[in-house]
Image (cartoon, rainbow, N blue to C red; front, side):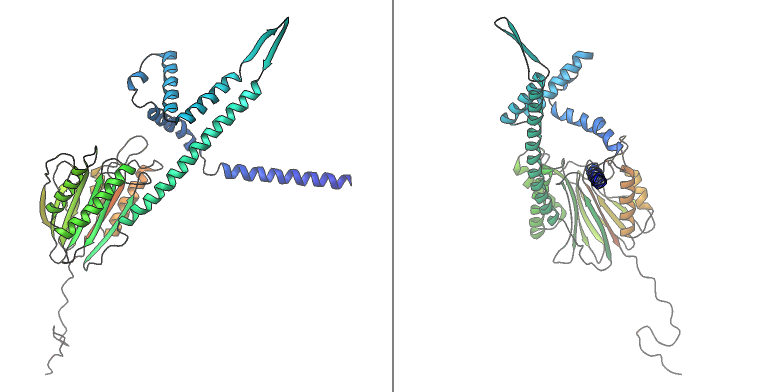
Length: 404
């Protein structure tokens, strides 16, 4: 019996150890020393900057211990005033309880000295209060994240899922957001008259505000294409729509082109957007566009426009500035020259797209993207070589050759 009890006890201990190991593995899944180092070196500094925003002069004041105390005070006030009044009170009371947990109360009752030590009680109260505050803030974040997921799904529905089937042309495209909702927008739209509308735009900033500007641009551009798809007309209508909002930072960059597939005629308008690259069939790289302010930035509408021809074998690469300005952890940018070199190497639209995307991902490594990335590659098929001369069995019309 004793041996059986000892065996059962060992089995329970072994089972408890296995459960503990399993819990620890699940709890620490995905954790790395790199992420832990980033937590204290970068995330903590970013959190401090956000909490103390607007107090730049106070942050730099003082030296040594005085500066440390001043920084702690600013962080406490910044964190407190970003909470609701009720949660702010809970936060303050939890910190007060933590202080009281290190304090003993001594007083005299008659001729007797009485000492009350509430350290364990106050410490537990402090921990419970902070855990409750963390849970409340976490629930708010989860609800907000769910709303952002809905917004992200709606935004994704505005972007093209499939490219139009245009004889002689091939497309490759991708889109990545820095946050749940992005401010980039692109489209390839086949018009009723057979022409093709190509556009890429980038709302200022990123996140929800930029996503709202992107939604405005989507609705306005759809209307503009129905009224008059001419590049200057589309840009002017979008500019007027943004100016009517009269909101701060409601502007965006735009490159819009109107392509006639049969001839390759390409009419374009550019407004504060990075210049697309046109790779000619012989390997030459040309930039399309001209410098100007983004749409909606000022009252007066002014956007340069022009025209070129996409010849057989040419490739057009449109993108947003999040691609060449993607940075590594030490701040090194991907660069426009490197982007041009990757395009100059040539290939099909899919090959060029994958080459650029792969190089960009390798450049950033584990660093999260700081701005939305959009890449659209359009390629026109090269001309077919002439048919070889007939061997006399049939003429070029397909009729049988006359017999001798």
